[in-house]
Length: 374
Ligand SMILES: [Zn+2]
Image 1: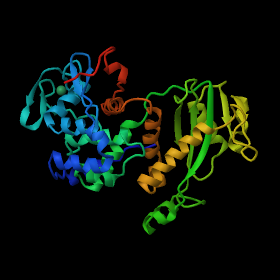
Image 2 (image 1 turned 180 degrees about the vertical axis):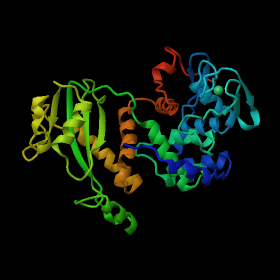
Image 3 (image 1 turned 30 degrees about the vertical axis):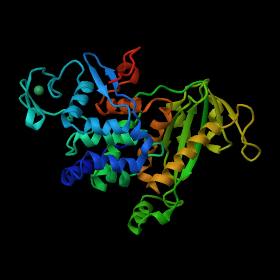
Image 4 (image 1 turned 90 degrees about the vertical axis):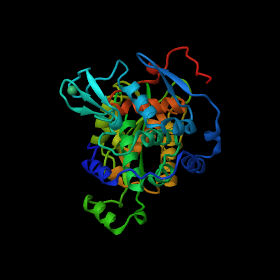
């Protein structure tokens, strides 16, 4: 699955950074967007302990905007997360360098090339400053139903197209990279999203139709597994767009092979694609024409995820084109699987993944450390 586009980079180069308004007008736009409560929250900044030093991190959106508005502070924040043991060249790993303050670049004494903190991250080649990128990440990872490129465009004062590309890059960072197979009690279910051709322009409809053999325009089958957790509300999901408007037995089997350990208990509806699962799993089927729940035999966990997913798509995005569905799914899966953590934890875990390295909240927050009061 190709998840990055070269067109994205080119576009951002052309687009440039549209700077409008100062901190206060940005704040006012954000108040309009997320309401006053979050922005007026007086909670103090949180301190993150990395390998060498302590980094201050904001705990609210308002703090994030204010804090990262200073480009040097934003850069220091990213430097601390990226190079906790000290700055080194991303090309040759040399630790000797000089700093060009005006351009915020380091010159490596090994390979003699310049590098920025953005090099090798999803920010690479983007003319958008970290003062916009970091609040954008905060917004998207913490907006329950997602955030549209129009909202981001108005909030940050970048063009809508730039905002759209920013959102996609951030979604890339929200992808789950490390993944262990589910075991124990697992639900599997599929849903169909789209089919609302009226949202598409004639050109788009054409494009979609050309890529399809039959079926409803734009309809996509999304298949998911949910791992139940003994502790209520701690279930996690994995999703895939398995293509087309129907789910085949082969695709369902391959998806399960990647996501669920053999011997697990699998709960599903009576869909024919799951019929051969008894060979590999303890398979229990709920016949939805009879009832939706028979003791533990149900797929209600996934039904809950589908309703969140569809609410987000209808409310925020209006319609998601089928070929972008997996990106939107990544975003919803990330928020769902991290729904019990704090805003700042979701933010840091996403920024950690931007750096091509997974940093967990637990690794970053020193045990027993209380948020600072100043
Ligand atoms: Zn170098």
